[in-house]
Image 1 (cartoon, rainbow, N blue to C red):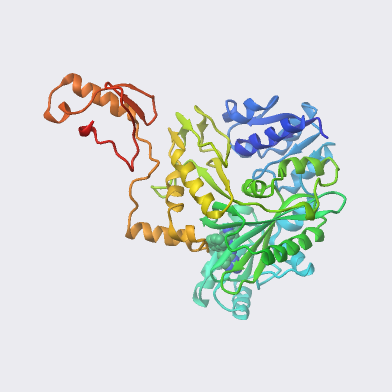
Image 2 (cartoon, rainbow, N blue to C red):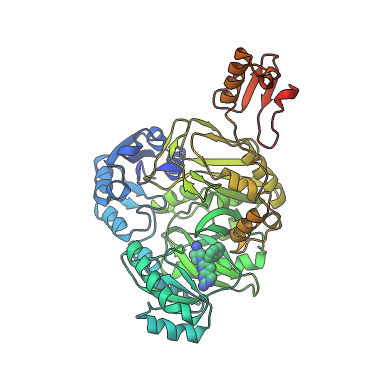
Length: 520
Ligand code: MV4
C-alpha cells in the first residue's frame, strides 16, 4: 500500500479521504489555498502545502502547483476527490509523468467519457441503449432542425463537452429550436470552451438512476447497485438514495450489467458511475453519461453495501485486486443523503457565506455526517457552497425517512443560512414519502409552496440568548405593562436554543413549538 498520499481537494471530500488514509496507515498530505489555512482538512492532515491564492483557478486547479506539492512532500500518489481536477485527463497525465500514481482511471478512459458524444458512441458499441439522438456533434442549427424532425419533439440540446445538464435546453417545438441552439452553444462555449452540441429526444417523466461500478487493474469489474438521484434543483442533486424507491432486483441487474459493459469497453479502473435515465412510463432505461470519479453521493452506496469505496480506490490504484467479487455484494436496508449547502433556500437559494458561529450536528443511531466544516469555519464565496452531507441508514425507506426527519430537526447551524429548512420540507412531503421522484418533483414542491406556504421551519433556531438578554433588560427597566409578565432568564447557552429561567425551568425554543412567555 502507499505510504504517503496527497489529497488534491478541500472540504468534506478531503476530510473523507484523509480519514481513509488514517485507517490504512497512509500519511495524508493536504493542499490548501490562502483562504483555507484554517480549514478542517488542513488540520486533519499530517502536512499541508499552500498551492496558491483563494480563487480555485490559481490554487486547487493549478496542475503544476499540485504536482510540485506532491513531489516536494514525497507523496507516492494523488487522490483528486471530486470536482476540481478529478476528471481532467491532462492532470492525470501530469501526475503520472511526475512518477506519481493517479488514484482514478486512465486519462484515455477519462477522455472517452469526457466527451459526451464519444461516450454515446462507446455505449452503442458496447450494446447499451442510449437516449435516441445524435452521436456526433451538430454542425449547425439547420442540422439540428433536420435531426429534431427525425426524432420528433420535444428534444434536448446538450453540450458535447458538458455533462450534468450545464448548457442543456429542452425544446418543445420547431419554432423554438434555432434560438435555443444559439443560446445553448453560447453557454457551452462560455462554460467549457467548446460550443458543440448534440441532440437527444426528451424522455418524458424521467428518473435519474445511476450505477456505482468498480474495476481493478486485473480486469475485474463489479457493480454496487443503483442510486436514485431524481431530486435535482437546476441540475444539482439535492437528495440521493439507495436503493431507488422503484428498484427491483431485475432492474438493478439489467442496469448493473449495462454499466459493466460500458466500463469494460473503456478498460475502466477504479470507482466510476454510469448514469441512466429511466422512463417512469415505459420502464426502459437509457445510458446518459459516465462520471469517471468518486461521486458526492457515494456514502449511500457505502451504507447499504458496507464497502468503503475510498479504501477500495486505494487498493486498486496500488495494483491489488478488488477485495470483493460481484457475489460478495449484497444490499441491506435503505440510505438517504441530503447535501447541506450554505444557501438560503427560503430566498431563492441565495448564497450565504460567513462564519459558522454555532454547530451541533445530529448523531445517534443510523446517522452519518460527512462535514468539511466545524465551529468558527469560514464559508467563503470562492468555492462550492456544500458544507456537509447528512446521510441516514435504516432497515426500510419508511424508517430512513423517520430517522432523516429526526436528524434534520436536531441539526443546529448558526452564522450562515443553510438549505436544512428545504430538506425538512421535503421529508414531510407526501410525494417524497410515496417515492414519486420524477424530474418534476422540485417544480411541484415550489408550486405547492406558493399555493400553501409551509408552517414555520420545525428546526429553526431562534437566538434565544438575544431573547433572554432582551427579557432581562426589559424586566430590569420594569416599565410597560407588556414586559411585566415576562420571566427573567438568568442563564442561557450562547447562540443556542436553550435558556434557563430564574425559576430554574429550562426551555428549548423551537419555531414549531414557540415558547409562550406569558404562561411561564
Ligand atoms: C434529460 C431529460 C430528459 N430527456 N435528457 C441530464 C442531466 C441531469 N442533471 C438532468 N438531465 C436530464 N436529461 C433527456 N433526453 C431530463 C433531465 C432532467 C432531469 C433528469 C433526472 C432528474 C431530474 C432532472 C431535472 C431536470 C432535467
